[in-house]
Amino acid sequence: MSDEVKVEDQSQEAQETAVSQAEAEHALNNVAVLKKGATVKGKIVKVDADQAFVDIGYKYDGVIPVRELSSVSLNDAAQAVELGQEVELKIVSINDAKETLVLSKRVVDNEKAWETLQGQLESKEIIEAAVAEVVKGGLVVDIGVRGFVPASMVERQFVEDFSSYKGRTLRLRVKEIDREKNKVILSQKDILDEEFETNKKKIIEGLQVGQVLDGTVQRLTQFGAFVDIGGIDGLVHISELAWQHVEQASDVVKEGDKVKVQILKLDPSNDKISLSIKATQDGPWSNVERDFKAGDIVTGTVKRLAAFGAFVEVAPGVEGLVHISQIAHRHIGTPHEVLKEGQEVQVKILEINLAEKRVSLSIKDTEDAPEAPAGAAAPSSVGKPERERQPRGDRDRGNSASHQKEIAGNENVSLSNQGLSMTLGERFGDKLAKFKK
Image 1: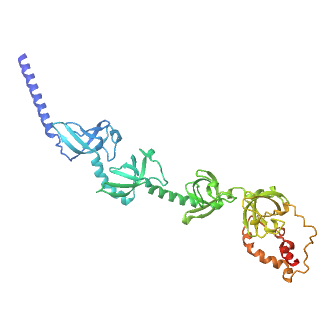
Image 2: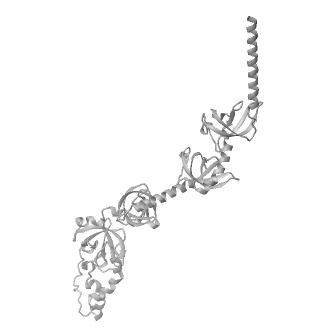
Image 3: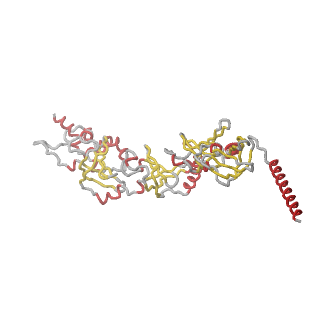
């Protein structure tokens, strides 16, 4: 009985061995035959710094060198793949004798990328990509192929240092492709410009003339300052920076300053906004009535000299006119004989006209009149030629015509009768002296 059991056990073992051998032979016969250049799919099973291992269902695992993981330079394979990730690969080389299988993810990604880039160029599709490298002249991104973003196409404003951009994700648009040269140019600036223009139109539609807003000085020019008022810039002309005369914008503001501005003019068709800083501030005339009155003697600064007189600033932004007849007790032919710009002088306020924002001043009324020489007689009209005894209005008309236009256009000055008055002695003193001889 025992011999029979032995025979049965041996027979069963032989059958199992035969099945195992048959299954092994079948499995070997069904192992895929891999060739260089074939495309396969697999799963990442291990990631080292310089390579990644992948199971493609072959009798041994394949390896992807770090240089074959991406079209851009990588420091670590983990920058491109992770454990368990499904990948599509191209066979670079295979050697069953040495059980080496080299694969490339880069080649497959590259082939797929060129298929879609032309469509993205034509449709102006927005794509996203992380900055892989910061190089001279711009940024490198991996979009299946090596993409280049020139420095001028990264932001709307100038960027001096791009070192912080590595790893940052950008929104890009394909600008130019050349497969033969393996060249792809992309731009983020185009997208930002379009968004800015759209946003600007919406903002302008919500603005009104006279509106007061908070702003930030963006940049200075020879003719004023551009101020950001919430996503768009408006121009503050140099004449609107301050109530006093401004030589250059940097005398009043600097880039980054927070300022209040008032909207003076809107031009939506040309996307232009005119702003004013001084309109949000108390004008120089707001305290004139409190600080000055007719008859006061104050210190001022000569700002400008003209043929008919001198403009003297008595407070920031407040100028008055000292008519030539009110500069000195003696007769002078031009204010330059007595005054110079920048000179400090004592002036007497003759008249204040708040309605017209004008002030008339006198220098000579702050000084004692010189004593007449002993024995000198007061000037008389007796014996004057007929042409010198014509009505004063006719005589003054010609002299004043040359400067009335300038005075009328200057909101800081006013000419009262007193400020324009001129005695006959002052006007004809020299001529009388000639007749006496």
